[in-house]
Length: 260
Image (cartoon, rainbow, N blue to C red; front, side, top):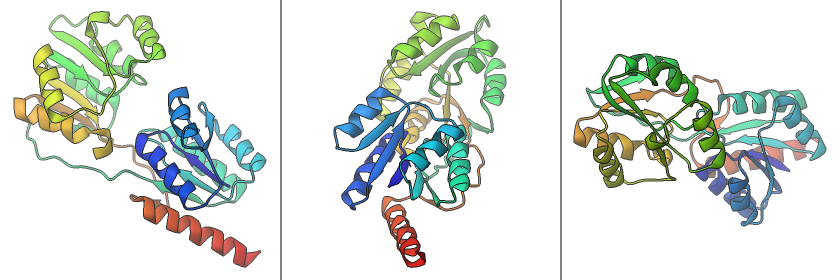
């Protein structure tokens, strides 16, 4: 049995490829919507965030042989839990990591944290569009909401829990852009123009996350960009393509058979 942390669209595509390769697979996801997508492909799924202890229990209960962590590049806690749970169970851990992207743009500032991004944004005037999701929204509302010369917009998935969080944080409804991507460069340009965006805040989640489309649209319009860099983690065994992940799974299972 392979345990796959499948928190993104490319992770779900990887799950399908692992199943096609003939492996028994259990995928974990955060949302019910992601669970339904995988279930539609005939893949067993467990929905909901897992603690390290819960993950370790799942590994034992399902006799998991390999953990494949294909969670989002910014899902630092999920990766730490997976690494620890795999280590406790004395089974291999493999990381599937989206390739990173770099951009040459003199109006872009790369930072290491959401807090740093909020600090820089607070020193500017104009219309700030967040495209970093809802998880860390409070970092920005705490710093930016109520500043007279700043209008804070948030682009996020149109989910009930996101809207509830916005309400709890006092985020104005008129400043919520609830929509699901991916979006083209042209769509992003139209959105920036519609709201008169002067600063866009994003995170380096890779091409699959359409970061290039966001940034290229900002470059085209001369909009300032704050890019939050990925968390610095030592994943150990990590790959950026499906074939290498599946090949490594095979190698590890073959080795285990030889040793048994």
